[in-house]
Image (cartoon, rainbow, N blue to C red):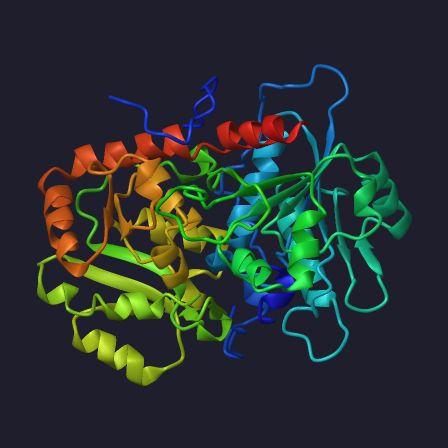
Length: 443
């Protein structure tokens, strides 16, 4: 998704690249959210993901610039902060000289004037904390192109000497200075949106995608006979959400109480029309199909939602769902991770457009649950064609599929928790996946 569409608001060393086939065997934040509290907190107990790493470049490391959108929605709970960091750190572990640049042309987050103070402070504190001092820039592309962090000359020089640019989220429209880089990677994390816009003839999105030399998507079912995502003339390579396994590893806790998830409730403003049908980007329609679930099992469920509709909260609670505040849970990287680690597992849904068009999308948040040893039950999008299910991970198509999955997990929880970790290590290891991306992109 282009950022402009977003509302302001045990590492496994030496493993092979995982194949994508079976191996046999943004709503604006409410004013009640404290902006200062959302800045990254320094926590000495948080494990620095640094140390000696295997290097793929023996002499001079290749330069990789990651274009991101953290300043558009600087909340760890959206997945954007964790997702971006896991890309940056994994690329550095692979031996690349990694930089982060944000130049989305989106108005500064939560600003009433042309004031970049908050997103700049957020990005600076977050990246400095993880060792990316002097390796980031925020470009005020929405106004006069002022540069924060790196200077304007340094940014231009960076683009000129970069060996590759990774347009993470597909959130940045490439400009002339980007085109000087020989390898330009489009890395799509929200499948279907751009494809529908392109199929509808929107030139902006056609040009956005066409500016890249290699296209990657989390839509792992693209091109399959059962996938109805319109691909037009573009060819996408499948990949998945990269997870730093050592950041999420946690001991098995059979006493954990709730199956949980974190997300926005209603994002219908992002729905799209295609070929006479309406496709929803919002998950709430899929959750409404599961309202009766708490009444069909003794298992308890808790939803951490970004929602300000008290009537809907009361309705969910009336059916037996516990509802928590996603903003509070997502206040910091640590609080977001602690919520996942403290869960029994994840019960979640996918967006309507991914379900109906069978994109093969799998959530980066769900991948983090797996890495933490938390079994996942999630809605089928076609992902199970390339990731094994039935132990540690279950895909469902209807409400009736869920209670048996819950029963199976709870009957041997330690076994399913261990299987969840093994799936994460096999299919979501950040270094494996990003090594695969860089090789296939020609870097």
